[in-house]
Length: 166
Ligand SMILES: CC(C)(COP(=O)(O)OP(=O)(O)OC[C@H]1O[C@@H](n2cnc3c(N)ncnc32)[C@H](O)[C@@H]1OP(=O)(O)O)[C@@H](O)C(=O)NCCC(=O)NCCS
Image (cartoon, rainbow, N blue to C red; front, side, top):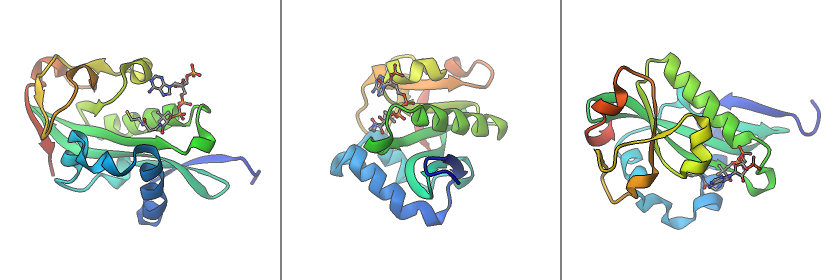
């Protein structure tokens, strides 16, 4: 393998320590208090829809997907998404999002939801959720709640609380 061959792999338990390090580096100690993190504390993420990127065997980026019920819509919460500073701006974040959204779509997910920057996620298929349509277990900036609508009338059905689902 060439030194800088990037590979995208489904997450497994062997990636845990590296992912923890990447997220700590990207978001710092306050990351556990964010509203999206509180949903993730309600139950496990779906390993089969979560992916890492490795460079020469070293895990350098991660995206996780957590099953949620959002109002009446069975979907997935995307995040955290983080890329090590040494590997930014090479399309890795974008590719991880693309892979995760596609995998969830194939599994029947009706909505990929996240709290994030519209300028980054808009070109990746994310649209703004109607202001305050979803109630998170903590404060969120309503302008940063985004969705890839994959089901019928997804936007209209995204009304109510969002929380972990089995
Ligand atoms: C945000 C992040 C995941 C992007 O990963 P990446 O692999 O560097 O991104 P990509 O290479 O796919 O895309 C890079 C492009 O996105 C842009 N971009 C990066 N962060 C952005 C943001 N917050 N808002 C708008 N654009 C952004 C870059 O300027 C670059 O633009 P260009 O293609 O016009 O040069 C990464 O920078 C990161 O881990 N940041 C810290 C954690 C974080 O903020 N995660 C997102 C949570 S919402």
